[in-house]
Image (cartoon, rainbow over all chains, first blue to last red; front, side, top):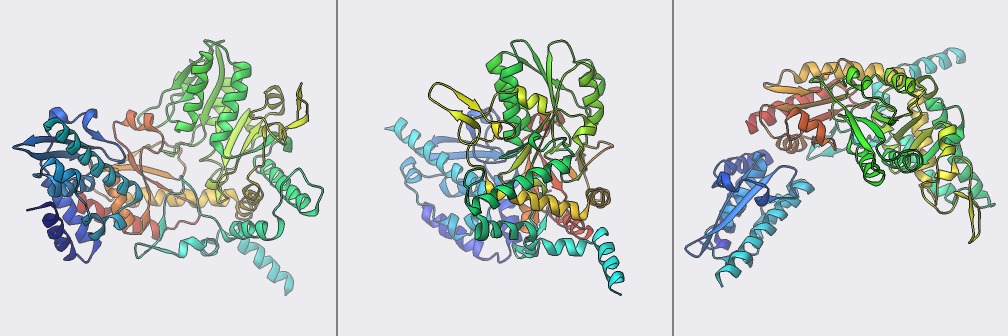
Length: 140
Length: 419
């Protein structure tokens, strides 16, 4: 599936949840499914600033496609990073770096998350795109 | 008949009437995320009563003009009102003189004034400043900056598992190098009330002056700076139902006179020539530039508001509420209270199992309950307890047992979701 197809699917998934509680429960569930970062990368070099909780993110190229792994000490944040991994993992660096992540707005995350949390989400996106650019440069 | 009515009215005022108090705070009527707001982040800032809000509107509609400058009518009434606040603050903490009251931006600025002006004047290389393990960053960093500049050292009073300062260790820290003690009255992260009077007495035995950070005390506890014999005392307006951007630095006249000015500018001078400037007298020496006039004036209305209810009544009510909250929250499985000092003010800090405080904060917010999560600008405190942060519930006079019930139910729901 393309990045946009995954986004559209998530938008549809989220549209089933009328209640914010269900939305959060789904996000928490997604957190449990995140491909976990290897312990050796779970250090300050791979931490994302801008969250009240800590988020670690790692990226590597597997057969020309980016594989993201992550973790967080807060489970809602872990759910958010899982969501981003779900959308962006398994695509080429150029696809990731140029992706338009319209789903964040559409599933109401920007609106429903606190400002610091929204900043955390934005920091995640920024970091993932930076990884993509770095891998792209390395590959070129 | 009229007499009876008046007596009744007075009695009503003297009694702590929670319904009347809540009615004074318009924001408490609003909803958050479709739920009635339960505001329990009062340690960060308190809400404002309509008396203060009206005073702010009145200032801009009837008085606005600069203070200590113009001969015109508006400048005179705004100057008078600003100076009335100074005297109200003086009365609130029972300072000997109104010129011992410096109007600042807040507690942080007050600490920085003392660190900068007292520090530069009296603190030399290898001198020592005593602070405590429970200080807010604003009572750590200005001293660290001073230490970097002057080559002096910070000594830190350790804290026990309950979140109480080790008084024996404190006593053993003094030497002829000790130049200042700076401690908080009430811990913002734990709620511990420190035995400030005893600590001041100890320091004075060594002729060391004491700065007390009163930001978390002034809205809960009656303070008498002369009885405490404290040398410097500071508090913020916004944590005591007043406007943001204003606070008070109290200093003993003798010390303030000995200190150089903080910043240069208008209002703090007597005469300026390009050769030499002579400084103004207290308190203006420390009040360079146009102050936050509206906040300065309306801080007086916040003080009036507190006085009308009475700090003794407020303290008694908040203590009962605090005890009730501890009992109710104890129902939550795996809750661990951080800071269990025997003498506590209106703060409850806790973690639940290994759930991240931030997750709890997000879910509570969804349920209309506002709490603070994180390290509360007291990272060394969190480090001591080996946790990333806590959920902090901080109470004010307008909070109720019903709100504590809502908090408890919301917390149980959050924990169920997050476990």
